[in-house]
Amino acid sequence: MKLAYKHNWPEAKERLEAFWRMENSDRPCIAVTAPGQPMRSLDPPPDYKTKWSDPEYVAQSYDARHEATYFGGEAMPGTSLMVGYCFGYGAPLHYSEQTVWQEPIIESWDDPPDLSLKDDDWGWQQVQKVVARCAEVSAGKWMTGWPNLHQPNDHLSLLRGAEDFCLDMLDHPAEVKRALRQLLDNWYEMHGRLDPLMPGQEGSIGWLSVWCPWPKSITLQSDISCVLSPAMFDEFIAPELEELSQWLDGTLYHLDGPGALQHLDRLLAIERLHAIQWTPGTGNPESLNWLDLYKEIQAGGKGVVIYVPYADVETAVRELQPEGLFIITSAPSPGDAEALLERATQITRDKRRAPRKGKGI
Image (cartoon, rainbow, N blue to C red; front, side, top):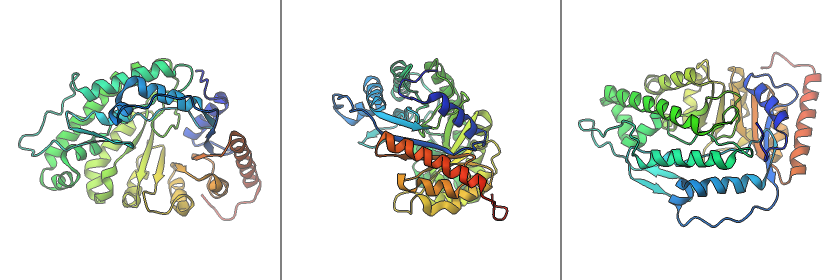
């Protein structure tokens, strides 16, 4: 595979393959971007709906941004296709500058809407069109990633409304489980339809832009889990995560906010879950304040994917083990990006030479 916007692809590929095998040794994976050449101008979209769902605008805007970006280390030019959120089984859609969201449509389990996958659904049609056009424009330059299609647990909570969804787990557990099964079956079908639209790509990539050498890889998540007890998570959410982890080749989990930390032990117990990506959430301490959490995840045998400010990257490299560690950051310039990678390599070498104190992790 050739990627015109990724200057060090062969080297990055080798280190990324080691990340998935938990074998990084000379330094952790560090995805560091920096401003490159000036970005060519594009006509602004007339509205937010166009911004997120128009195939030509989405493809050309990614192409322009990637062309103007320096992708250092293991940073990959890829997509985070929000058009996936436009697929909502006919739910009314709302668009903003930052995202797309859906209104609830399940008012009662006595008369629920049809949750089968329909080819004439506008959102589903747009998902396919955007993926296909991005694949055409990206060929030989950057990677088209798996679109941001909600997983069943989060999607059902949107279609029902979060509060009602939580109450339904107590009052209508059978109906919830049947709906989750239907949505997961649909998800498999959508994956099968979308995969052929991205021919010629090696491996796979999702919204985190962590390249995986295997063809089926996505980022799992459950935002609704923040308000669920461990027992409810184990009964309603964990089976979905276990099944998808078995079916997929590579899996990351997006752990979002302190409220979700109560489920960490259950996540660490998912055998085929490769790594956990931590997001502290708005208003919470960032980056290095969570070093103990990162070490706990590494001690649990999983990789760690973290966003770290440029100034804190060297500390993270010193404190954490390089195997299965993936740091995402940005640098002021390409020169600063490369200098950071050199320092990270030297820090890792120095750690290897230094005698261990205690057992460590």
